[in-house]
Length: 203
Ligand code: GLN
Image (cartoon, rainbow, N blue to C red; front, side):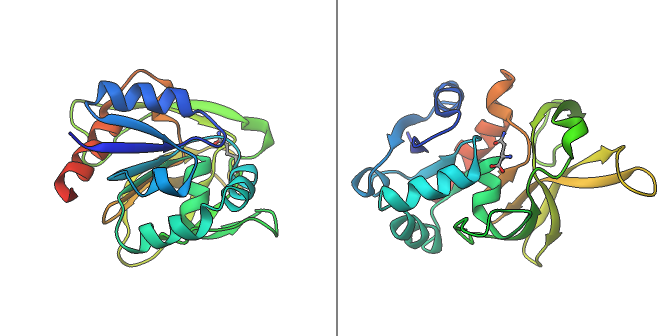
């Protein structure tokens, strides 16, 4: 059984923990470097990326986490977690730390104020059994992907200037998985199962 950590500094830690349990993993909260050292995979929850990045620094987790990610620790980031994983953030705070584990440029709070939150049914590559009902809350989108990054899902954006556009909202690069939306909030555990499978393939 894989041991999967949930970064437990801020955000929807409980919801991710419940979904990982359902997906068959042993789950540990991660707040210290020693706890980080013991997991085979890690979830970065949704929440607030600037707050989480500040807490990562004050809990002395920033460098150990970057080291483990560089060494190939499987990781799944939802929403704020996606923002943290990205190489670069547009519309972020200047003092926001990046983990730089995912070769993408994300735009923070990208869908604009008028649609602070919305839901959509998405086809997600690698997830069988029909559309995934996705909940977006002040969500980022992926604006640019590097070569090794696979696009798993897109969503239509009605508010785009000059007509509707498709935005990238789920990506994978090796063992790094990220979604703009919150699979931990819907009761559909297929994305978490996908991640648990990734972790057990590596462990
Ligand atoms: N807007 C938040 C951020 O940039 C993310 C929101 C969320 O995780 N629901 O960190």
